[in-house]
Image 1 (cartoon, rainbow, N blue to C red):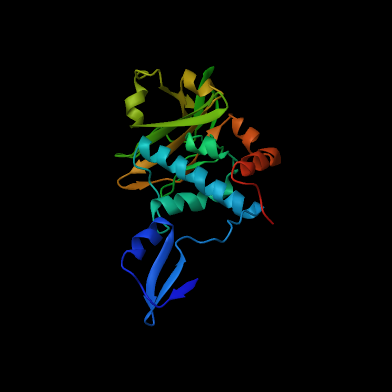
Image 2 (image 1 turned 90 degrees about the vertical axis):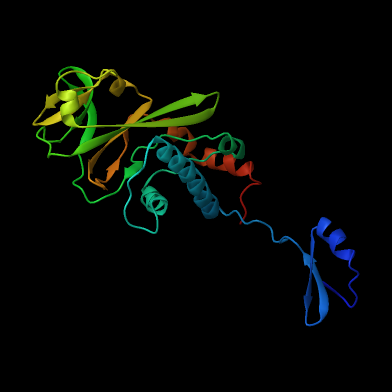
Length: 249
């Protein structure tokens, strides 16, 4: 920091261009760097936290693009989503991968949070067909609808990309015949199953949300896709950290 007694008017423009801030304090003109010269700290814990936040931000944008995600509690739906996602694996992505929009399909990814009764489901078969087998009562209450999230993982030349789509329906919509996508409703062990060839895709994940009025159930993704494991190792962490300048003590 420097202090000067005189302040020529044309000095401010030259200093601003040089990255220096000029201001008056106690009648004197003070110069200081416009940006901090403190080195960025990247301990392992800090890097993991930053990677979690960056990945959650991208997942949230994808979830929002699929529809209006239902989350209650917290200061905002986004903050509630991030809070619940702390139970999920953190994938480590390089700077370039983040810039190119890379994202991973994570088992247990949360898609909704609300007070309605949670739906139990798993990937399996019903009547010999690939299905999402649920514990839903086929006699759904009047006015109850469901939102099916379909998540698809792709690996494009080393850049993992995730897409999320959602569709809403009432059980009666599927009870008569398959819809245009081939999705159909089947009885399964006292509950119902959503059957279709898509449920056999090993690169896909699914979640089913109960909707009633403005409320929703709390649901997470089930998937057999394990591409995320490649990005969750110590080697992946160190490779990603190197693109940000490495870890610091």
